[in-house]
Image (cartoon, rainbow, N blue to C red; front, side):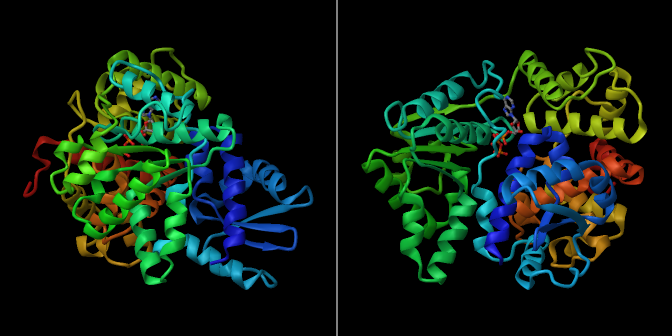
Length: 461
Ligand SMILES: Nc1ncnc2c1ncn2[C@@H]1O[C@H](COP(=O)(O)OP(=O)(O)OP(=O)(O)O)[C@@H](O)[C@H]1O
């Protein structure tokens, strides 16, 4: 893999994130990949279904972001993700493009799992009764690492802001931490790197990576359960940091004492600092989160209370709350209809027909319903098959899994043939961008959601 180009591209992506709204980035720019740097010309690959749109609308911001990193003479060209590169493009870059557009195959491709999202800051975090303590503790830790609470253990159901708080600590320390070093990782990335280090006999470098930091932020430690070797290594990492006064912050979907398969000694370590939970937001907090998002993304509402039905209906998961808003915006850009209560209710009715709460579904139910609708076998979803039909079915099923289940990204990936976290995120983006650009795709996803929300959607109906 051409790491130089990859590194440059991640810097350009950070510029892009700063330059556009979250939803624009998410829908149109996140799926792009650097394909090659040819002299001063950067070739950026875009999926075919959005290539023209991106080239027409975002050339200028792509150009300025690339110029900010590569110098003023840089030009950009938006090309297809899959077509052969023009003559003269560096062969190593072609390799990078291939690696970037294919699902990561090797554990080393875990970089994306360890970068910070610059938009997950304390400023953007809306405080309510359910998260007040977790927020205060996270801020205290960011201000006085190693001194306030150590370790800090934040637990709660999916989609309530645990990852957001970890990144907020990281962003805060980067900005105000006087050079303190901070590293964020998921247990999935930690495990992948550990396995890779064992295979390549590079354990020392692995140790340095995680032990040579002032603050280590670790997401989703529930995945340590039943991974004895990684757990052992994690325990030593934890101790090494703790003993030298470094700050540890850990998130989990449950309390330490409910992690039954975890060794007692690690559970005790987790319990030895502050353990705090995050609970679902109340109505006022949900409205504030939505309003903030609308304002931040420059979404124009035809009625000030147009988004109220979203906050009314979606109560237990902030990601689902934002997902519903994304669908509303997609429907609005597809149809040109103004965003009023009628439009929002229409989209929500399609999402969650006749119910006040979205019905949660299992991954198997979602896979089966998607396969039935698109004429693909569930085995194909789990296979390496990347033909257009199977890839699309997989993207839709992953997107719905993210929306209609409380499963985390790694567990969705596992249910789709052992794919990783980043691949699932990528698939969800591909599905949402296609929904916003193609009415048939929107209707398909809307129809499948409605089908999965029916009370008789249980198997056999
Ligand atoms: N209090 C909040 N204010 C604003 N946005 C929030 C808040 N809580 C969560 N969010 C947003 O909701 C989305 C989901 O949050 P996040 O990914 O942090 O959840 P999580 O608890 O880590 O879930 P998981 O365990 O599934 O990873 C993110 O886009 C995040 O920015």
